[in-house]
Length: 399
Ligand code: HEM
Image (cartoon, rainbow, N blue to C red; front, side, top):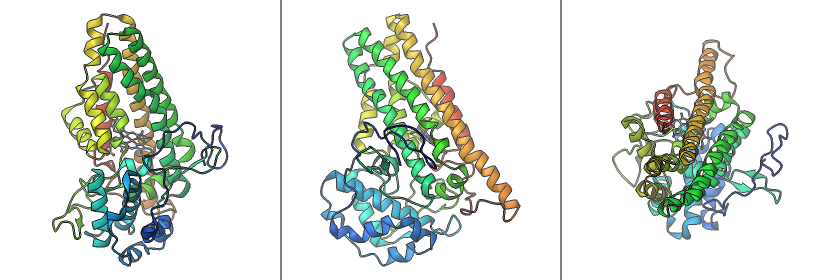
């Protein structure tokens, strides 16, 4: 569905897979003994639509994760088991949840999660970072595992991936910037900041592709619930018992791009300080990143502070380049709020109006109401997003 040319190709469009770094897993199938997991995972949209996923999971043999070899297979297993888990939980919508994840799913999911240092729930690293493959030599991309939502779901995952891809030169620029600070090399630092600002601008452009590929009604009524977690979610107030793992229910936040390393890394480099409440949420989201990503963000935090360096240099050119990064980041966050308004607030209002007029609602499914004002990560959406955007703007260094 995504191609090198970057030009729309009806009905869904084609986009450039280009120079994407390898996903955590380049494999798309687990070894043969894990066939029962793969079979279910590849059939999730159909099994969920026909309300048969739970019975298929109950019949699944209990397989040990011990035979998975290396991080590639572990990441693929986490992707597969997290998608099956989300499907199992939300198959009957927010009013038909279960309190227990059966042992034959819960135990291997727990084992794989422990081995990777990830929580036993779908994370951004599963949903996006590990969930893409090249469909053909032209660079067309596709997802590996799917959920209900058809082309909109695929578009949502792959556009988010393209935002991550656009961030790659920015991530490289962070490393260059830190080296340049240590070597007092203002020329290289200036260049790195220019590259960072450009990368953030490109991320905003990539984010705009959401409009081309994702139908708001499908996103809101069909897709979103499958990303929802069992922490701070009124539809699952008691959490979830992972049978064979813990007798007490456990609570985990749902998948959210707030778990992407990229903006955490930019914030740390630019010395953006969010409000206590927003920082607490974002810090919690770091626990849903692969440990090496988390360590990268922490390392940037410990590096010599860029902002201080720019301030004390008295170099107007450096200050301007720094401020362009901060403004680009605030602009990305403003544009993200526009997207969230369209895909959640406006879509929720339309879904409500549809509920009031029977027969007029989205044909695709019954929209969830528990998360009308909350993100899948569990945040109070707009106060959180606006606070984070505004504190970003406050990071500008005035002349
Ligand atoms: C239809 C598309 C999208 C919607 C509806 C959406 C929605 C949300 C919501 C509701 C939150 C609040 C946190 C939570 O509870 O989950 C959030 C946070 C966040 N989202 Fe998105 N999002 C979308 C696309 C993206 C994309 C493509 C990215 C880029 C990778 C992204 C990056 C972020 C970040 C970094 C945060 C944390 C807040 C911040 O640092 O500014 N989002 N998003």
